[in-house]
Image (cartoon, rainbow, N blue to C red; front, side):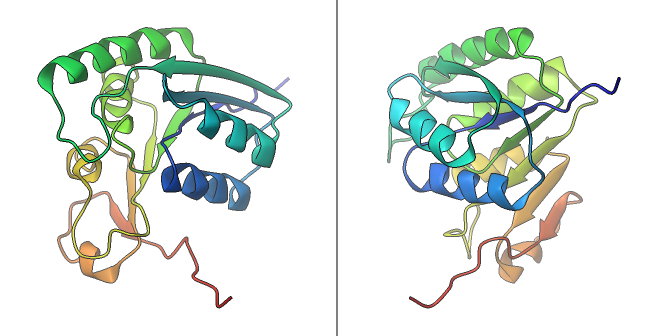
Length: 172
């Protein structure tokens, strides 16, 4: 019997959750998903499970490394990194997928540290067309696949960067 593939999906607030829902809808279907979300963000988890509806899921919450529109604080980042390490040690995921919320930085760092051979897929937000997000600037160096939505961002080539127009803007 073949082992089922279990993704570890990072949920961020607002638009990040909507984007990751879209990404998961256009990709392969997974019957078991592991989720990580901010401890103050139960809405993202609810929205995700309502839209994706996996047969089985495990979810973990962790402290955010930053507050919205604020820079990262060293203390918050250390707390988040420690929390991410504890979660990843418990999770049974085969790969990580994230798309730009600040919470994805400690998760990606911990995932690379604990599972150096497993893939990390990062999809930069569709709103980033000229510069990478703060999370993207860090994660590009440890991601297995780093997808940007703008051809302008692919010019600054780092080996794992790929251009793919995942998000289609449709007329209303």
